[in-house]
Length: 300
Image 1 (cartoon, one colour):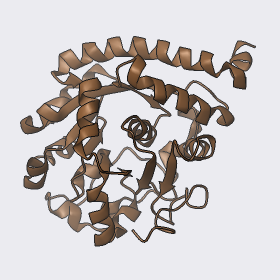
Image 2 (image 1 turned 90 degrees about the vertical axis):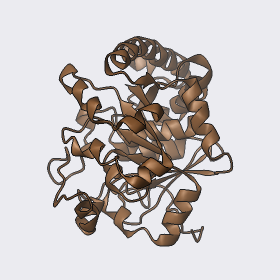
Image 3 (image 1 turned 60 degrees about the vertical axis):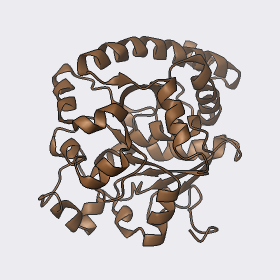
Image 4 (image 1 turned 180 degrees about the vertical axis):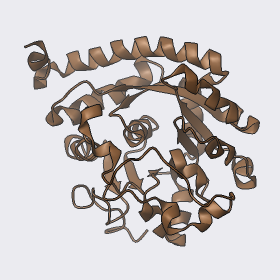
């Protein structure tokens, strides 16, 4: 009964209040873990520093690790580099060094160690390290190269509270627009996927055009399957992810509020175009046809 009442359209304010209450509790845990790991919490100063990196950029590119990322043309890669980019998890292995890496604990320490290479040292990107959920994973942070620590920050997440797709856009707008002024940005709005958190961060950074690259969902291939030479640079013949089975894990709504495809589409439909213009880069993505495809009206 209470959940049904809180899911009403007019109760968005209550759902947002619950979100920030949960966020306040999570920030306390975040500070404790940050102290144990010796990594600074992602705060307003760090957010402002990210905003200042590319003041003329108009687009945020969220770089997923799907197979289509191997097909990016030189022109598209150059355009991505001219804008603001966020590389998610195993994007660390890709030659293109983004402005920001979004990393969550991976059992293979070679992933973090792969950051220690000349092009990363030259660019010195930022890194957001998702707070480990288990104490036994804390040691993973020790593999972060020392030169990266100055620009590395710990963050956490709280899932969107609603379970009605029609509420997603409205609640997203209210939470993300309030995040900057009401709380530390260190606890990001989530739907159980890095892509969801990075969309929220992109909007907090002031971007209204957000392009999902390598977010294919239509298969479980990765960019190194199509271009094995990417792994060969690191002396690797293969790289194992947490993906199991033939259906992308983020499409499973049993352990997250919504399948990521439903969440992204609801964001695209439920937010004003001036607030969030959400596109997907590849036509092979499951999202193509559900949200606009980047490049169909823009030659880049």
